[in-house]
Image (cartoon, rainbow, N blue to C red; front, side, top):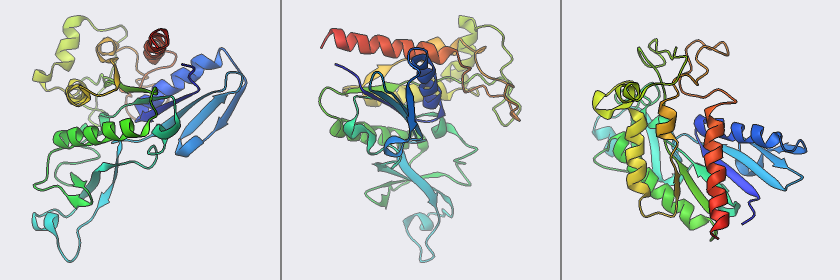
Length: 285
């Protein structure tokens, strides 16, 4: 197949991959139009090849927003909830909802925001899940909510994309905070890749460390994607070694950035894997 349109849908790590792909393609062609197609945050068309790539920012894939109690009371209010975030598990975020309907390739991710207590505090501002406009009772934890959202969004994309379109779900990008999380003095001072033993110390779920969400998210992804039409682009384990590849203190941030990746860098390799998969599909279609 001739790919004319590639959409990245997800959080800032998918933006990281999108920017990497743009830079790689820019080396081939400088005849580029910048625009904002179909509610995308940003998009570029390489005119010589009639190829468009775009990025749609979404944190949870599903629609979410601040929830406040009804003064007349309700099911959640009766359980003592007085603040939180409403997550509609069966409604895609409007920023990307139209994208699957008319594109050749979608690359989707989610994960980092599901384990983000600084945003979704489990006590002060918990995730409150809704289905068909009604709260799910009893309320469920974020990991259960993630399974629900993944199931609904995978089904949604499969129902919207045309036959022959390529559906890709990228696995979790690992963080490398050591000594604490990003807002508690965590840093990533490494100057060379980790050894295998160091990788296990940092990411083994049983250790319940700062970066534990990496493999936890993947567990949910693989469980839900099993039997779907999605190809899983597994970038996790190879990336776990690269504690040396983050911006860290570069860019003047107030805290170390041990989550995103330097460019050029590791995300270029992710795109090499993506290109290899496209070639595989082409050779076997």
